[in-house]
Amino acid sequence: MGSKFERFTSEGKGNGLRAVVKIKCGELIYTGEPYAFCISKDFLKSTCQNCLTRAETLLRCSQCKIARYCNAQCQKQAWSEHKKECKCLTRLQPKIPADSVRLVARIVFKLLSGTGRDPEEPYSLAEHQSHLADMSEQKKEGLGHLCSMLRLYLREEECDLSQLPSGLDPINLLARVTCNCFTISDGELQDLGVGLYPSMSLLNHDCQPNCVMVFEGKRLQLRAVRDIQPQEELTISYTDVLAPSTERRRQLQEQYHFFCQCQRCTRADKDSDMLAGETEAWQTIRDAIPHLERLQADQQWEELLTQCQVLLDNHGGVVPDRNIYLLRVLDMALDACISLDQYDKALEYGYRTQGPYELYFSDPHPSRAVELFRVGKLQHFLCRLEEAHCSFRQAYDIMKVTHGSEHALTNQLRRKLEECQAELGRL
Ligand SMILES: [Zn+2]
Ligand SMILES: [Zn+2]
Ligand SMILES: [Zn+2]
Image (tube, rainbow, N blue to C red; front, side, top):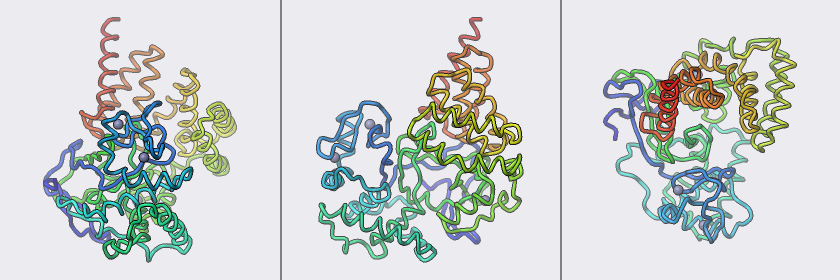
């Protein structure tokens, strides 16, 4: 790897990565496995610890009864990474430590067993920034709690933490993990876990980046979403782009300790669209979102749909669909309707999200592709073939760029598109 990019010092941002050759939109720039990763607590029961496939019934590790696998082969492949952790998990039952603690434990096992540095990586864990000095007292206190948990968790394995390389003591590792990890999501953008991909941590942020990361299992793929010239810096977005500049800047400052000076933030680009409508009304919607997200996580679909509808009925007249908080409610209502098998209604919400998505994702973006795919499937199911074909086509054009033509989800989409084409041909 490394043939398409190199490490450099980016003005005002420190380390960064830049292209050394011309890179075309949709081109794969980097692909690699994580140095270490772990599955999020919420998905431990439903996700294979080796290939990250999700299924209702998975084999369970007979010792800790926490790790799950598709089959014996997946279990065997994951054993070297799970072996030590298995004992720690078993002893702490029924408590399961936070994701960052389990991830750092895996890093500690790797560091102490001497399988530390991958010689091919141009950037190592030791070079990652911890930002400990920039952290608020409250955040440091939080890290302190995680650190005590880590020590408790690791006791069973009798890890000699004093043997860790200098600068990589537990608190430092925890701090590094919080600002250098990537969320591993599946093709449909469900966040399944967190992983550390050392070289990719060099990528700097931009609110309108020229690259995106997509995962296949735990394998990371970095692709260009625009044509990139030699010497041009490669960027990704660390944060949700469906947020106004003040909100993005606040999140970036809090988690990554920098003030975003990108063009979009400086110009407050699309802020007035994102916050369109009567302020008091969208603030009410915004404040209701955490509660709605809880209902969504708990899969309380009926209650979620009712509450979304109340918000849409009460404020839809004075807040347009492109307001990002209202858009978020439309998305959740769509989700709830699909889960409740109310497809006609789901499609109504789906139609309303299309315009805003197009407005906010002007470059190819995985979220837009996944949304179009979802709408296409609804249209297909409801026998609106022409419309379905059009949605699948648009989704495919984006997904070829963001996921590549070999990704499992792209293959799934291609089959739907072909199916649709064949049915249209028969009419
Ligand atoms: Zn598996
Ligand atoms: Zn186990
Ligand atoms: Zn920005």
